Image 1 (cartoon, helix red, strand yellow):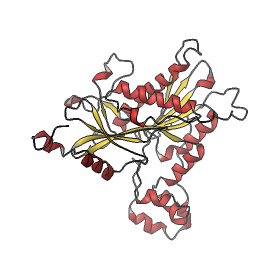
Image 2: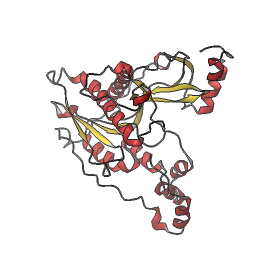
Image 3: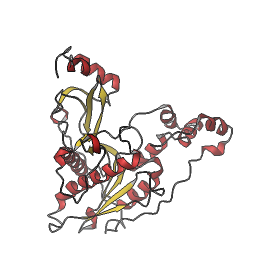
Image 4: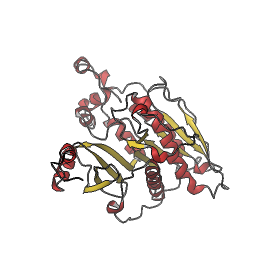
Length: 339
């Protein structure tokens, strides 16, 4: 993830207005999008977003990789049909449940039963760092695209689109960033999907989004966090200090540029530990946040609450208390009822 520079740098730069200039962008050379007849003219206005019934109560937490991919690709398709052509998704990643092979991902052309893969949050428990996450996120992104584009297969003569991976924007080769592009029979159906983009990737995102017109551009598991720290909050201000905070790594300016392009969160599935047990947060673009707790047999998740805004750790802890759910260790040794 993007690391903030030491506080010493902040002191050194305060006296110089030249320090408020955004750091130089990396080389943005990458595979370009194919041109369509729509690219030379103004793209057609997206369809008016329809009022959807609140699906919060009927949105279950996926317990397998296949379920998550179906749910995520459906959210992508529904959002696209609603006129959202710039999408962000945050998903859990497939991980081998065997202790000796943690973080081992499945090969896209291998005959592997994905039902055996567990879903894990992209956090510090992945010992291999950002590249290990990429090796799990890239095939996840590929499966999302395959299922999203399947709906147009009939229109393309039953021929699935060609999938092209571009790593050229990852100049170091170890930043865990990539781009998947589909090439369908009809170029108007092409899709671009950035894998684990960072703030330095925003110029490339802007370039692709400006070329894409009405075609879908998606970001999967951006490397910036959903929650703000002090620099993130300060960087959202349109002031000299806000510019300095952006220079030091605050994500406010990057998010503003993505907002200007029309990017919206269409599917989010996150997880962390609360009271010793696994918690899942889930949301589509047309639902509130759902909060679920894993049962003690690790076979399913039980709904404990909902929230209009993204619930904090403290919110989730209170939801568990309100449901009478105790610490997991107390449940494990019989001091509290099983979940």
